[in-house]
Length: 82
Figure 1 (cartoon, rainbow, N blue to C red):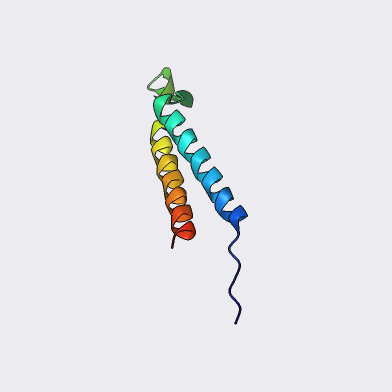
Figure 2: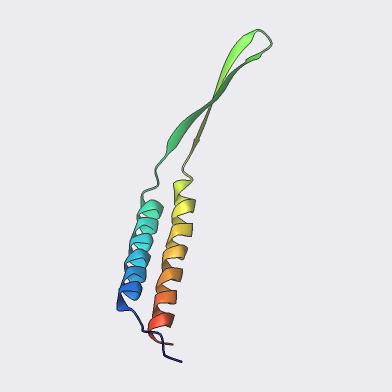
C-alpha cells in the first residue's frame, strides 16, 4: 500500500476560503446592510393599508459566516498538523 500524497494546494485553498469567510463575516457584523421590504397591501375595514418590514439580519448572518470561516481554518490546521 502506498501513502497518499499530501497536497499543499488543498490546504492553501482552505486557508484562503477560511480567511475570506472570516473577513466577510466581520464586515457584515460591523456594517450590517439594512433592508426595507414591502409586506403587502391589504384593507382594514374600508381603509387601504400598506405594510413595510425593516431589519438588519445580515449582522446575524455575518456571525454564522465568521464561525464557518473559523471552522474552515481549524480544519486546515488539523490537516496540516495531525
